[in-house]
Image (cartoon, rainbow, N blue to C red):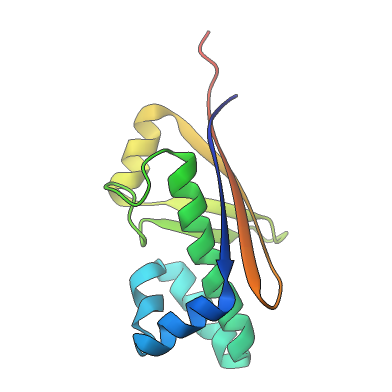
Length: 134
């Protein structure tokens, strides 16, 4: 595999909280994919703080991924087309859908992602890879 691109993003959790307040919660609906949204609601029901941390990490992952693939937030990269989910082991994985999934497949791009959060910040690092050309 060869590196196609890398991306990193740092989000201040209080800024995400402020956007959620300003949009009366619609920000989560706009940014999260369907599986992420289900997890967000479940975590938020248990703990407002953990729900907000989940939202911040997933927002950060979308930003970092968009940088790694070199598109920024431009079609076919959309908020809901990319989800960061977890394997049973807890390892975060990228799941693309729709036009973004097609765009990635056409280029043979896969990605590795890591996310972390503390009380004030969420950080994501993404490495986008392509198969070596023989």
